[in-house]
Length: 156
Image 1: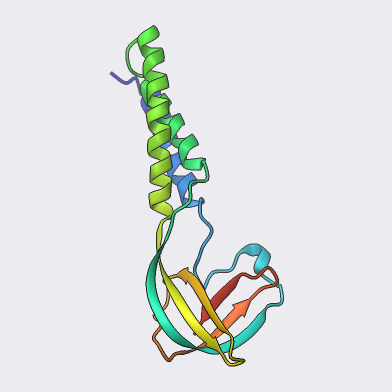
Image 2: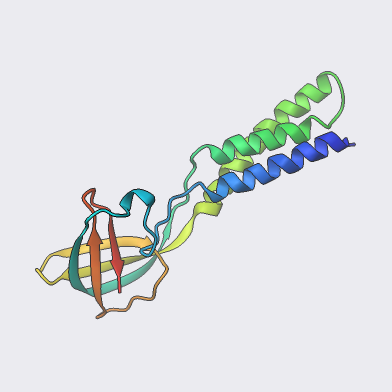
């Protein structure tokens, strides 16, 4: 049976786990800029969408989910048995939690995306993949914003 302290520790680890996962992946939205992109000049191009395809943007496994899951699994395992049985439960819980945490992180950070093929007004053809946060159709006129590092986003 779990003690009150172990339950509290499990609760705290669970909150830590969720907060870590929430901060794992940078946004792939065309409408969200990172802090280091603010107040930087960017090049703007105009073009027409030739093709639109739904895609899935694979989730990340940064290690945060593994760490949080391992901590939570170890904390839950510490409430099982006593002596060497408890040690085995802690280690087993930590391993199982780490594996589960890694997979949960990947699932939570996987998102729907869109692949846009665009013919720029200068004749250049480009493809941009970004988070699916707007509706794009073939023939739409769009702005393409590209920063000095090559990060490109499409805006309507």
